[in-house]
Image 1 (tube, rainbow, N blue to C red):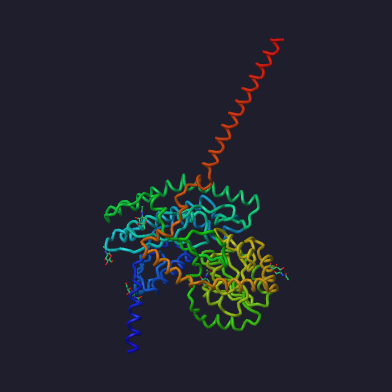
Image 2 (image 1 turned 180 degrees about the vertical axis):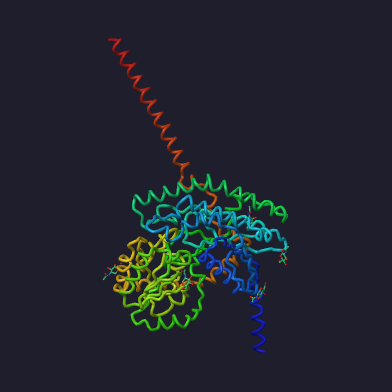
Length: 526
Ligand SMILES: *[C@@H]1O[C@H](CO)[C@@H](O)[C@H](O)[C@H]1NC(C)=O
Ligand SMILES: *[C@@H]1O[C@H](CO)[C@@H](O)[C@H](O)[C@H]1NC(C)=O
Ligand SMILES: *[C@@H]1O[C@H](CO)[C@@H](O)[C@H](O)[C@H]1NC(C)=O
Ligand SMILES: *[C@@H]1O[C@H](CO)[C@@H](O)[C@H](O)[C@H]1NC(C)=O
Ligand SMILES: *[C@@H]1O[C@H](CO)[C@@H](O)[C@H](O)[C@H]1NC(C)=O
C-alpha cells in the first residue's frame, strides 16, 4: 500500500517535468570552449532532455539522447596558419593583449563564416524533421548564431564562456557603464582612475563605431547568404538581421562574483560559472596519486591551458624555469606537451593532466596558470591560490580580479620570467593570506541557491516553458543611448538657455538704445 502510494507520487513528479529537444551550438574549435559546450550538454542530458550538439570536437561515443553534428571536417587551414599562429605562446612573449586587434575580429569572422557554411551543418539545417524547443549558442565576438533559432521558431539562449562584458550585454540589455565595468580585453582594475575611466570610454566608443559600421555590414551579408535560402526551403520567414540579433531570451555567464566581477546584470542574465565541473571528483591515475600523496612539502601544479603550449617557450625560458623549480622543496607537476632533458627529481612533466582531480588533492599548494576562465574557476572550486601569467584575451581581467581579491599573483610572460615566478611562488608559500582567501572565496562560490549545473538547467527550462521568458527582458534594450544619457534633455535645455540669452541681450540692447535716445532728447531740449 505505502509503496504503491510512493510510486504514484514519484510518477506524478517525473511526468511534471517534461523532456525537451535542445540544440547546443559551440562554434569555436578550441578545447576549453568544447569543455564548456560539453558541460552544457551533460547537465541537460542529466536532467532527461534530448540534445543535439553542433561541435568540431565530438565525443564520438554513443550517449543516450545525444546526437553530435560533427563539423570538424571544415577546412580552416588557410585562416589558421595565417591568423591562429599569431596566438601561439611563442609569438606572445612580452606582447600586449593582441586579442584587442582587428586581426582577432577578422579571424573570428572568417572562422564563423566557414563554420556556418559547412556542408554537414547545412544539410542538418535543411532537415525539416529536426525541431527544437530552444537553441543554446555560444557568443564569441560574433552575433551570427542568432540566425539559427528562427529556423526552428524557438527561443535563443546565449552562453558566454567568459566574464560578463558590455559587448555581450548590449544584446539583451545595453552596453554596461564604462566608468565601473571594464572591457573584456582591458588590463585595467576597478576602481578606475580618471585616465583609466576615460580610456575605457574611448575603447568602448571606438569598438561600438567599428561594430555598427563595419562588423554589422559583413555579418548581415553572411546572415542573408547562409540563413535565407535555408529558411525558404524550411518554409519559415527569417526576421531581419537586427531583429534576430537583439531577440535573445537569456544569457548564461561562465563566471561568478566569488572570483569574477559582480556585474550589474539584467534579470535574464545569470552567473553559472563552475557548471562544467563534475561534482564527483574522479580518482587520480595511480602514478600521480602516489606522487601527490608522497609530496610532504606539497605540490605546485603548472599548466598554461589547452591552447597555449609550454613547449613553445624558448629554451632559455624552459631551462631557467626548471632551475627555479629544482630549488624548491615542493613537488612540481608541469603539464608539458613535449620532451625535456635533465628534468630535476622534484619536477614531473605530464602530457595530459587530470586538472580537477589534481586541484582537489589535499597536498596542492598553488596553481600556476595562464589566467584562463576555466583554470580560475577550477582553482576557486577547490580553494587553491593561483599565480597567473596572462597572455591574451580575457586572461588579464581574470588574473587581475584574482590579485584584487587577494587569492593570486600576476607574473608577466617575458624571457626573464623565471626570477619573477620564483618570487611569486615564495610569496604564496610564505604568506598564508592567499590560501586563506582562496578557501574563503571557495565557500562563497559553493554557497548558492542551486549548484551551477542545476541552475543552468532551471533557466533553460524556464525559457522554454514561458515561450522565451519575455517577462525577464530588460526594458533598457530598446532605449537608445541618447535617451539613456538624456542627450535630448541636454539639447533642449541648451536651446532654451541659448534663446533666453538671446532674448535677454535683445532686451538689454533695446533698453540701452531707448536710454541713449532719451538722453539725446534731453540734451536737445537743453
Ligand atoms: C531520453 O529522452 C527521453 C525523452 O526524449 C526521456 O524520456 C528519457 O528519460 C531520456 N533518457 C535518459 C537516459 O535520460
Ligand atoms: C533528418 O533527421 C532525422 C532525425 O530526426 C533522420 O532520421 C533523417 O535521416 C534525417 N534526414 C536526412 C535527409 O538527413
Ligand atoms: C523573438 O523571440 C520570441 C521568443 O522566442 C519569438 O516568439 C519571436 O517570434 C522572435 N521575434 C523575432 C522577430 O524573431
Ligand atoms: C618525444 O620523444 C619521443 C620518443 O623519444 C618521440 O617519439 C616524440 O616525437 C617526441 N616528442 C616531441 C614533441 O618532440
Ligand atoms: C600577505 O599578502 C597580503 C596580500 O598581498 C598582504 O596584504 C600582507 O601584508 C602580506 N603579509 C605579509 C606578512 O607579508
